[in-house]
Each structure stands twice: as structure tokens, then as C-alpha cells.
Image (cartoon, rainbow, N blue to C red; front, top):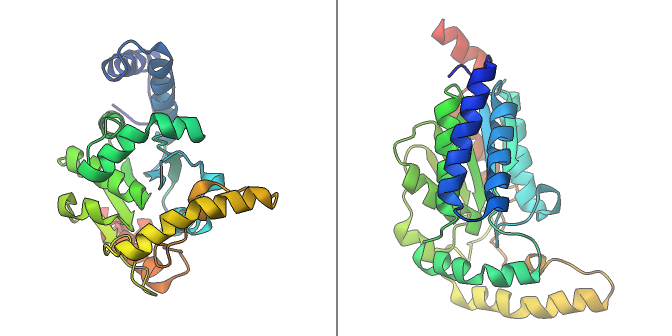
Length: 275
């Protein structure tokens, strides 16, 4: 299907296909079906004249919007976006939120979160897989880059393992937790960064002492922030030195820029070579 010149008939067919996919994924849940269809069609409409679709999979429970991300995670998303722009490409940045915000929402998803952490299995992986297959099938000039940190990196890798054959989907994964290491698959379309270049990442290197200490002391920091009248998100209170991948770190920025240059290069040079 032509990306930029969809006829009314094409739009009707696209809507019908999206509806069928939503029905397969969310049987019996009309609200989620409608939300999925609306999101999918919106992405297709906004990405039809773009070169790249950037899909951010947040760390933690996966429900943090861009504007509330930890500074270092936000810096990576912004850094990748600006690099793509500097190479001369047009991109659309989206987020795939795996969970809603809030304590009770997290408790509701706890079983799925634990299962994913320990076994790498989550019903939510299939949703993004279906979404990306739909998008790349209909927007054939579009390249997708997933951006994931921590649990978001593990989620991105799980998606990549299921997508497998789609060569227009890439993944940049930072600080994956150690339980996911044995099942992680790295291809030429995957950039996996397990160290920020300044100190070892305890979460990637199975440093249980530092890891447990970070999580055991987090509730006290969370309570303290509220008592002081400056409440913070629980994930902000998890302090594990080394488990941050700020764009300003040379090893982080350098590896990502090299990966993007190697796979895509400057758009003007690519166009000259193609002609």
C-alpha cells in the first residue's frame, strides 16, 4: 500500500483490518479493542510520511510517560531522536505503555510482571508484535527503532525474538536485567549496552547485594519523600549506581551513534548512492 496516497477505500480497508486485529487481541473487551484500533490508525496516519518510527518501551512497570521519565532515560530517547534528525531523516516518536500508572494498577499487573521477569513471558509482548507487523506491512518505506531501558530493554528483546523475520525493525536495549540474559537474542539489528562506561551495572551483572539493597531501601526513600512534602514516584527511589545510561556518557552516546550511522548513515549520502 502506498504510504502517502491512501484512497478513501484504502482507509476503510485499513480500519476494517485494524478492527479484526483488535478483536483477536482483546476478545470481550470493547474498551481495549477501541483503544487499540484508534492508536494503531493514529500511528499509521502520523507515520505515513516519515522515515522512522521510534517506539519507546519504558523501564520499570512500563507505564511512565515521556515527560515523567527519569532524566537519564529521557536523555537517551531525546538523544536518539536528535541523531536521527541530524542524519536528515524524519521520525515519529511514540511510546508503548505496558501498564497504567498508579499503585493498584501495578498490583493488578504484578503477576504478569513477575512472570516476565522470571520466565520472559508476557501476554503484552504479543500486542506490540501484532502492532509492528501491521504497521510495517502497510507502511513499507518505514523503519522502526525500539528504544528500551532496564525492563523496557527486556521487553524490546522479547518483541524482537517474536518478530524475527521483519528486517525493518531495530532495537536499542540498555541495562537489561540479569534474569533475561540467557534468553536474550542479539542480531545485527540489535544494539545491547550492558555498561554505561563509568562503573559496572549491578542489575546486568547479577550483583545481588547492590540490587537487593537498592530495592529494599527504596520504600524508605519513597516514604521520606512524602513526609518531606516532595513525593516521588517509587521508581525514582530505586538507587542502583551503575544502572543508568545517560546520553552524556561517552560510551553510551558513542555506541548508539555508531549503530545508527552503521545501519542508516546520512540520508543525503544514501540518496546519492541510490541514484
